[in-house]
Image 1 (tube, rainbow, N blue to C red):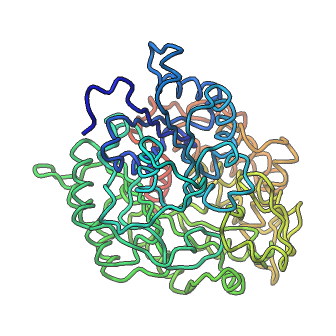
Image 2: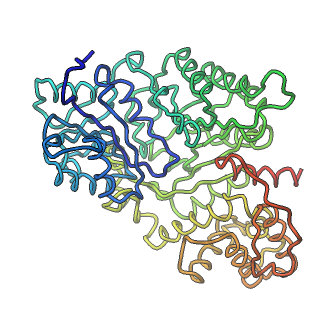
Image 3: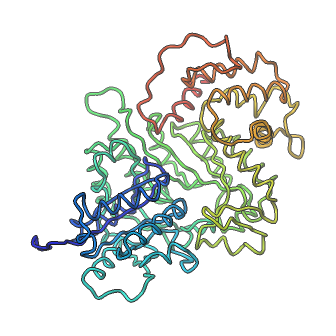
Length: 553
């Protein structure tokens, strides 16, 4: 215990710039929980990437110095700011560091996070910092702070973080505040690491997956549940790898759905997992099937159905088992299923990606999340750069610009496709109209692949090309403007009867809860009741998908 007579106690601030306010940094809370005797002198400050850099600096200095700071106080005592640096915030964090160092050169700046754990010599942000911890920082950051405060002073700028046994790491969940529990998505993890070697992912550098003590973890989950936590996002890369542990965790949440005295399950719980697509044994299926709608969300990484591409990137995936498991999840469970695909992988062509997309679409998953390949610093995917003509953006997030199989123009088309797909298909607002767009009554105007088979991918790509040519933008669309765009496209390019298109759009628009008056539906919309309040913003899309499923059933 530090003496209460210390006049100028050391000040340590843990800071990061999150993508959005709703995201609460799990990594910084791990550091906070493991500060030991420095915990009373350490605080956490979170910002977003939309925060102006000068505002961030001003708030950090105010945190360090207090509201009654004097010039003398500001130069006394060592002050440390630790930044969590990621691919999505490195540019903004660099701007903050420039200003912070100019305003207070004596502050010790320590960086950590995946973006600064590899290729450190090449980065401006590393040059601005005093120290960098690569890899795990749970125990290494507190040790560095003690060395900076009490000596001996570290001789190296770049410090390799130690990977201790997980039992030595204090769990961070008590560091979530009441405001976090009420308003934010809580990140949790029952394990770290991944046994697979997919080369686009930094987890491929792990030797294996390691699990935290399950009893201790569940006790922590019970603690934050009792404090009011209801939104849990597991960051485990392979949640369903160990069936027994997965069953225990699922049972924990299932038990909390059914409150004694209530005939219906609680409707305020939301749990998100990343799952291995080809590993879903019957015991897990039985457990998953017991959950009601709106509780479970599964993110399923497919990435590519092309077996040659899978081999290029060292991805082990049984495509037939994957398909069977996805069919079961969609048809036999109430889980909301997101499936990820990556475009731009070495050797993947537009045609082969389209075939994989159509294969996934046919399985009926609730959301397909198509994304461009990014070259994460340190990821083994870089070994393919020369052999497969891979060209990446030099700036974060290092998105692929062209490959030997796909030119730049096609990658730009795909980027627009992905943004429009998210607004139209994944939003759940246009479920009936999407069927007209992707699988119209006749194939006139409908793009085809080899053999003459209609292709949902190429059908939507045609709409995406038209929408770009018509508007020149990929964002800023209101639901009403999308209704009008779909009507114009389906009637003019698709050759569909206006009345049939209007009927579909009207059904979708009314079901979505929107209450304006799109041009295409003027004079057709019925009188609508006051909008239904959706209590959980996290599940608005799921509820829209579910509403359509119930109408179809």
